[in-house]
Length: 346
Image (tube, rainbow, N blue to C red; front, top):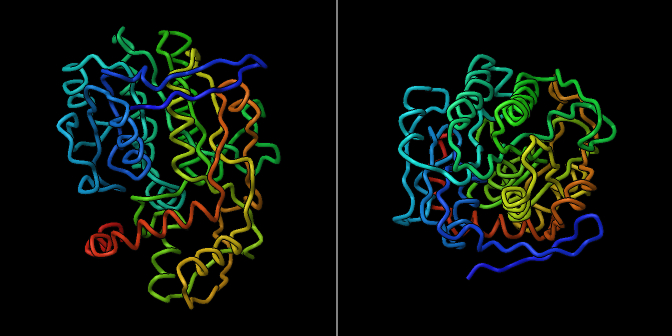
């Protein structure tokens, strides 16, 4: 059975029950990615009737998805309007979680046109089709903390003008489109700015996040290469906490393109994170320092959770050590399968 949870909103105690997802029809773009995989598993626990997953498996693997007859997997690129229209119009979705992305900063620097196609054209294509679907209760867009650039205060109301990488530019542009479609066509959209999320089902690779790459290298006794001084801080967020926020946003009354931060509100030095991985993995790996990448100007990144906590009752529960212990355990438990896919993201 799904569990109700309690949250505070402007000082008033309210209850929100995940059983609201019972019998819901849901589309998850990017559902084979690690966040999507965790989201799909949580939705299945809450008695949804159908989940359609769209994913080209550029940064996720359908092989890790649960075996459940409520899941329909469609392998496709999100920017292909004709196929997208064909698939979506076969269904009347109650909720759409848009996680598909050309991920992430270095990948966008190397392939800027692909980043535009997925992160902007793909998002607009979805919204353009869904503006005619009156059954839609919420469109949840997975944005990124990268849109804050080098801003000192990372709250949703701060003025931002991201220009560090195509990824930051395009994720922000897509945010603006979710607001445009909400205001002009009444598509009920909400955006979550995701801060350095990690957890099970994320594989290492050239364009992947630092944590899965460090875990794999630590387990193999290889050097952990830090680009920068190691004193840089990030708001590392365990995926279960992010899923809590996404589900809360989907069930919230917010419909007008509102934006919420999805972090922990706490920052961790990159070198400290690496040391925790070494300790938990019982690794003899060395920390090696190299110059920061020329596009990476962010020294400190931490989310302001005032709005997420006040309006959605968001309260992340998993600290960095506990989250890394869970993630490393998953990696060890699935080591053979992970190693067989090692070259996929290289």
